[in-house]
Amino acid sequence: MNSNAKNTIIGSAVVLAILVVVLGPFAIIWGLNILFPVLNIPYTLETWAAIVLVRLIFESKVSFKS
Image 1 (tube, rainbow, N blue to C red):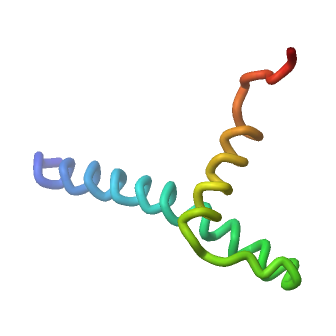
Image 2 (cartoon, rainbow, N blue to C red):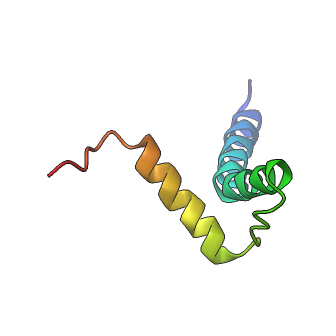
């Protein structure tokens, strides 16, 4: 495999990872709106950030006990 092919694969992987990180929260909002139409969550930067924050809290290994 030559250098150009490796660079293309690495670049594609990076672009895909960025798309997943950026579009992932919108996919969660879309899914919630489909399952629970009464929620009617808008697609804004605030709701995107809220989903990111909630995912960080639920996926973190850090305990919030006092």
